[in-house]
Image (cartoon, rainbow, N blue to C red; front, side, top):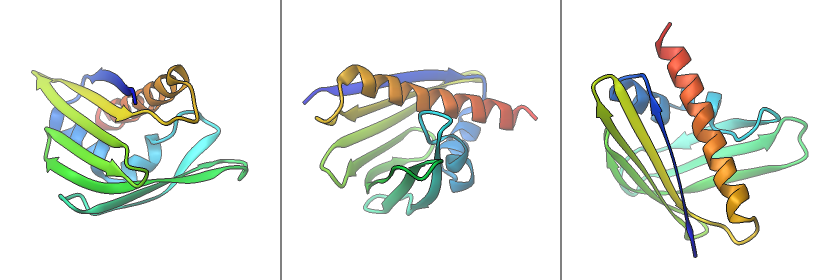
Amino acid sequence: MDTITVETSLQVPVHQVWESWTNPKHIKQWNFASNDWKCSKVSQQLEPEGEFSFTMEAKDGSEKFDFAGVYEIVIPKEEISYLLNDDRQGNVLFSSEGKETYVTVTIDEVEENSLELQEEGWQAILENFKKHTEAYFKK
């Protein structure tokens, strides 16, 4: 099984990047790959062994799925590691240099879609995250 790695940098301090990544009110604003989708529900216990579930659905109601699993590692402003319900592993790393914060997401691929399509989807989600976070915290 291959892994997918995507990354971005934000002109926002790491504590605000962490807030946007982990707060349900923010997650609903950015956690989707295209504008015809939305993240309609977020539930999480942000701690080791805590469960999470993000409901993703097409705005026209044609498709819906839950991105769900259990957190394994939660180190505020540094790392989140998780195991999805389908046994795929995921990891998010946060690092900063001055006012710039770097976010790197690594996740095991799924068999149903091409690796290229998955990389594009994950990068699109990360770009939505960047756009929302920079706009929100630069107000």
